[in-house]
Image (cartoon, rainbow, N blue to C red):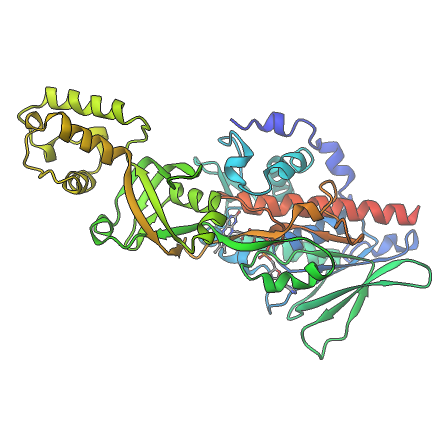
Length: 457
Ligand SMILES: Cc1cc2nc3c(=O)[nH]c(=O)nc-3n(C[C@H](O)[C@H](O)[C@H](O)COP(=O)(O)OP(=O)(O)OC[C@H]3O[C@@H](n4cnc5c(N)ncnc54)[C@H](O)[C@@H]3O)c2cc1C
């Protein structure tokens, strides 16, 4: 088990959390502090989960910052609204996570380090402290008690309003240019896609533009010297154009081992047969772990299913042999090994040329071996991907090599920060992607707040 006490051993105590939280929220965004500090202008590009979490936390940590969130669409937090089927699975307890690599195919090392400061436990507490009551399901996914993503959105919008954060919708940032003023201070000029919006300059900029399988959107960041890991989709289901298999639509088998032969990619979990092919946690995890491999093969690749979660064919053959000895007069269709669903068992026996009416006692060693083989190594050809309830995340983005892992600051452009899915970090389903957004956003907010203190000193 991925122990949260180990993981969070050096996490914030309630007291240290209080020390970064103002005693009360100033309705005008901490204007009261301005006589003590020079205002620092911070732009956050992207009004999604990471952008709002960073804006709100930065304002709480450094009330003298003047923060503007730029969102290209006419509404903010659109993905939060549709997340988790409209319920927003905003984190996970991580109680069943043995190794972060299993849930973060990309970014696990960085998150392992950052979770010590702001991990799932801190995120849970943050939302509850800010009025979003949470509930942890049996599967360890965490949702708002209201079961409504709107609760999370309302929380962010209320805090942004109370803190005086400026939110500009329909402002698509298209270029970012470093400027050096007469006093040697570096500032950033943001330009917008719409010519009617004049460029604006800021002291600090954070990029929280989320994932997108189109590399286009990251070009202006690549031009600034950041390494971009080519973005490809992750978290998708598999199209299996085999009518007999699709006929099993609605069948769920738990757990199976799904793997891609000739590779290290294999995942265990429930598999669901759909009217287009294969879905369910085992398939989604496989799509995530093997996202790049599958992309390189243009979504055409072989898939092996082990229906009985037992890698050793001989063990399965022996079990079938014992079944045959115990029920020699029973029909093959009447005794289902491993409690397999009836339709699946008939389909598999027919796949190896054995009619359901055959008696177990008549099968012989050769047929039992053939059955064991199809139970352990059932091959399919995948041709294309489908969406998982339209949920997908992006594998790739700004390379973690270009980012300081303690601060989320760009290594090539000081004063520029990143958080959320724009980074080459992504997780499987279960609240892991939002958790990565909260953690990286909080880290960047803390780092920016620290630099503003240094500037004041
Ligand atoms: C249908 C669906 C359901 C999901 N459900 C869950 C779930 O339940 N749990 C979970 O953990 N994860 C879920 N995810 C994944 C999760 O939504 C993302 O990982 C998360 O939103 C990433 O946060 P972000 O702030 O980095 O990006 P986003 O939330 O995508 O926000 C980025 C914002 O930046 C804006 N933007 C982009 N470019 C520019 C620009 N040039 N100028 C200005 N603005 C710009 C975008 O319009 C967007 O509003 C789901 C994803 C989808 C698609």
